[in-house]
Length: 189
Length: 189
Image (tube, rainbow over all chains, first blue to last red; front, side, top):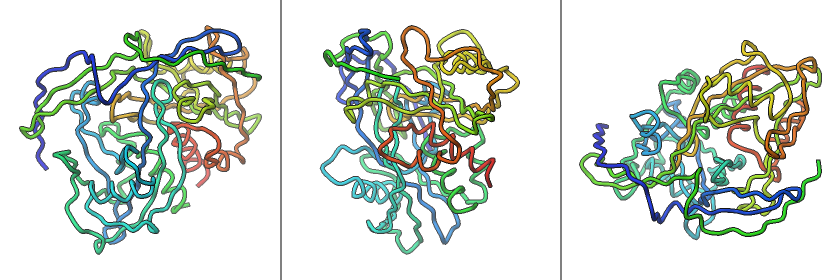
């Protein structure tokens, strides 16, 4: 997929519907402290393994926050989504897989593995991690996200995954790193 | 270690020295978009394995952001620190190990493993991950952090680590989860 990015401007944000900083004042062992935080949504993330293709299925996205760091901005990530609607975690996981990758995975094929916190220093969302094996019969669309999200579906051969994840010229995420290590530890002892 | 936490107030934060939201306006494939982001520091994180004790060494910290999520706020994390000073990454890693855990690790004992991005949806810091084997001869202090950081040093037996990391009643981080999976995949095939 061809992507063109043209940055128009980056400016101080005085009001955001998404990022709402708060200050917490508290006593820790009787010492008063202030800590500034961003209250974020929790999230789900799903590692997809495509049996027919012997490949993992990831998403490639443009992330403005990463553009600020590496002047490129494209990251390879697990299929994932925010918990910002009135559905169960597993239903949100199912919906994100469909929207982002085009595969219709039934709820009983989504294996909940565990959960953990991200960005604890200043934000702190709880991410619940799922795994699903998929095959081409489950494919019902092209994925790519909704509302011009421009998400690209990436197939990575299992045998190339360890090289890929430790190649620092490729921008990956902590969630993808954990997920692949978990997969190899669990299934390839 | 006994910790007492008393929350005084949580309020909207109008100005922060630490959290500075920005808005990025850009064209992606000619479609104009705005995305709000928090520009954060990069970080280092270090997995410590204590040979004499056959244990991993973590830190337990009170995190206001996690308090908002689970009403407890204490997390188990890798020893870590922000890249906010004019030193190399490995020097910052060395300094954080000393400050937080009390072990004086030489630079050539710190093995750089890889790097990846965290919180890419809205923040996007690059975290560089190190590993070091330590022993009691390297211990020069009690750790605990500086400036009343109230960091508690935690020793977790290697044989208990897999149960610990998948116990969802314990608040862990994506970095710790990846690090332990990496350790077991690398050293216990």
